Image 1 (spheres, rainbow, N blue to C red):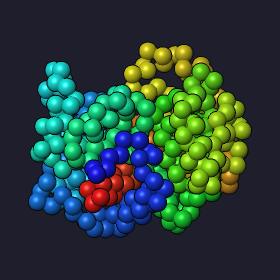
Image 2: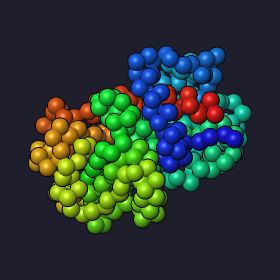
Image 3: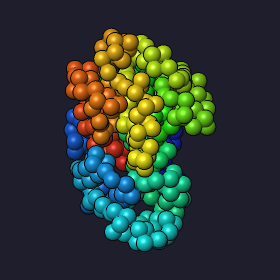
Length: 309
């Protein structure tokens, strides 16, 4: 059966561990495996703007011995109304995997239903699972290995209703972590995803906490994560959001409340002085740049794992 990665819990805890271990190995040897040697093509589709996703998947596929076939919706027939299922049937006969950065989760699900090759969610409105693999790998690297993840407390503060919050809940629960989300009452995570995460956490020895209290969320946390307050498509809400999110800024006080030596994550792009201060993101407790680098290694690990199944 073809395996896909459409949301974080499409992997089991054991499978996630395999991918993370492989990501750390790829950082040590960037040409450790070349499953797309030939070269075989991987379609990398973009319906949304991108820097890190475009670069990391393009470079990653090339380093895996393949050819990254990068397509923007505006220059493909999907941009003119061709159905997802028709596109999937065509691509699946010509490429070895499909990576897609798009809007609704139903789009990657439809692609996976018809492609016949692995489909990877490179970001949807609901989930950003490749980013969480990179985040977990970066934490593991900084703390001595994948074994260090279990039992850590990761707090995400900011927009709790966005794809990053949802993926932190699922992906970090799979890793056996204690996950907290601190967000305004109007920007809470999807209750169905919270319930899924709580079930996973109970199985893996972690926990899930969702709160509106910034201080309770960050107090004693080992990892502090945040994201822009204005996600793509939410620009018209900018002024209203800033009034509600100001108290969730990651700053020096946040780190004072967190555990000693707590590390900071941000998936980027970052807006200094808004969701995070310059002294924090550019300071000694930030592993943001290691996190960004691990987009490459984690995605190479994921693709290698998927095509081996």
